[in-house]
Length: 275
Image (cartoon, rainbow, N blue to C red; front, side):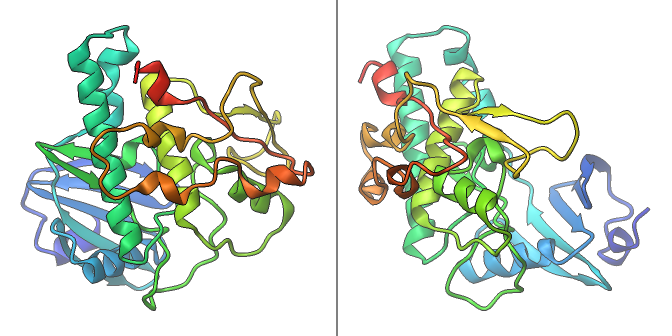
């Protein structure tokens, strides 16, 4: 058993390993979620959640080079589960309204994060959780904002939901990437699209060897039928009081140069919902 579990007094509770790869292990221990990372990322996320006053945050700390984070266990469902009926062909009015409500909830939560001065940096379907009538955006380890939290060199999040301008920076340099709310909005639209259609909003051509993700060895192509920006996915959502869609350009800045090596796009969710 990991010594952090024993040190936190959780050794006698029922334990389930939920995730264990790439230096990150996540446990469910009774009503607690425990994340342990081989580096600073768990504690970094803990500091951000604490600064934001997040309701489900519990504690965080260090264990030599490793760090840990404890959260209240969120009894909820993710976008994959919530959008499954629509993916399987349910086009009823009730299902459309449910999808719109979920998308609006996610847009509102993201707008609140941006209003607090923070950008998420790694939005994907698994990071939007619906708990009853409340939408949670989780996994803020990569977030950037106004507070002095432990620094790390950010090189992008999950390739499948990475905004085009961020993909361009990943491919054109090896420098730290500064996050923007605009890129988050693209990633939210991409996440909604992916969870609904089960089709990634980009078309990755991976080499036969090498890591996954948008790296210099990869190529992404644009579908000619797709829209230039998945922010359209939130523009038509009713009840989005925060005006999130107004912050996202309809075209990514690098598209004007025509020199980019990655063009990540997806179609509009709202028109396909019949809005």
